[in-house]
Image: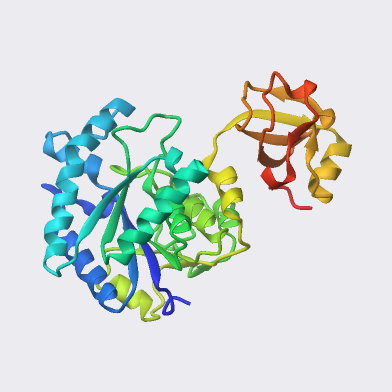
Length: 353
């Protein structure tokens, strides 16, 4: 499966890029050498790279993470040019042109923007350019920010219809407990159900400079896996790790792909922030969950939140169990004066039938 992968998204985090004097050029040179080698083999590559905020922190002589969104945005604005300059100089050794692509969640939620972004990536890859992706921290707000580059890498892998997502980290894969604290920590070579693994093991969700610990990586991996994309979480400090993985060597943890969500379902489930909650009766639950029918307003018994037509809402039964998530065909104020609440094509079922 890995040997056949042609279009690959690679994600690197701040912990791998962090050096004493700022960005670690030695790691960047090693990474670009591996990517150049894979590119020579005919593979199409997209790099999702953290490091802009870190570069800004180092440039301004700070020794801490930003306290607020505005501080993060300012540091990202300072650091992004430094980050791209490092990559440009390193890739220049191999004659590889790079492109900077900055995204927000809003770019992925909208069908039109999603398709525009998809077409842009296709054109870049056709030109032989290697896109380097980061979140647009400078412009993002709480409502439109993706939040971390683990999730961004999952979204990008779905956007470009990747054959493989590789998340490089400081740990040599996923372990059943923190290997830096427990000597008896055991590596997990394959995970078939990432959500189940998250509930079984106590993973950290944050690192010193970055925002994504192992829990975040597994959540991101689960998203890509639900679109049929295999994910590898592996140690980025290992020599030739990318080349060895694609040669078939078993390194890190493989998260197996599962059932495929449609693109619209993916956007509803993972990119649209719910603006309200609906609680429905047993008849509506049966029609929606087992019958695959639309949700009619007469089946709604309680409404929470203030939402507009086109907003995402969560749907619960009267026991408080989450049934799924969908796009409202009417506002919260109009709901009981309208017949159709959520069309079946705009609903993603979460509760097993």
